[in-house]
Amino acid sequence: MKLVLDRVSKQYKNLIAVDRVSADLEKGVYGLLGANGAGKTTLMRMICGILKPTGGMITFDGIDVGEEAYRAILGYLPQDFGYYPEFSAKDFLLYLAALKGITKAQAKRKAEELLELVSLQDVGHKKVKTFSGGMKQRLGIAQALLNAPKLLILDEPTAGLDPKERVRFRELIENLGKESIVILSTHIVSDIEHIADEVLMMKAGQLIYHGKWDGMKGDLEEFYLKQFEETS
Image (tube, rainbow, N blue to C red):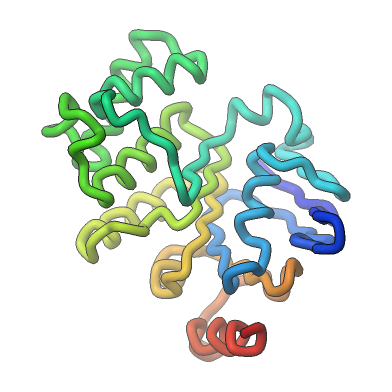
């Protein structure tokens, strides 16, 4: 299981949003850090096939990002996820499961399993418009897991969650990393310190750090804030 980013770039007219990023990622959790405008979301959207790179290649076990087989192994939670407010949580998951080609019987079983996983089993029949921000975020994480993805991209997944919920999802994400490649983008450095097997750090569109982080290298948040200060 390997995700390969080979000199991936994205340019908008005179702006280079992502600049020749290369990395080989295998099973585990990768924490993606960077200040606003560093290129994190653009990179994740390219990994998800939403944006087309202007240079370089993205492959998963040799499958190109543009192929149907690539989308079949992908789960994605964007920062601003669109919901259908009149749907119940369960119907919302069943609808998305149908779009992903999951059979009705499998979808029903998976929806119930995921609602329990994200602690929404008691409100699965309620309309999404009645949910709090944290509940919607939990539902977003559930939909990203519908097809048991081998590659899971999470953009600010703990936004809107209270401290207790954040700890629960850190454990969930850590467990998912045992069976898949998880890329987690967040501004909450402590989340990455707790669960990431490796840290990716972007600055001005470039990958400036990729590797494990331990106490021997100093404080991760201090290092991150130093990079942020230099770009502000």
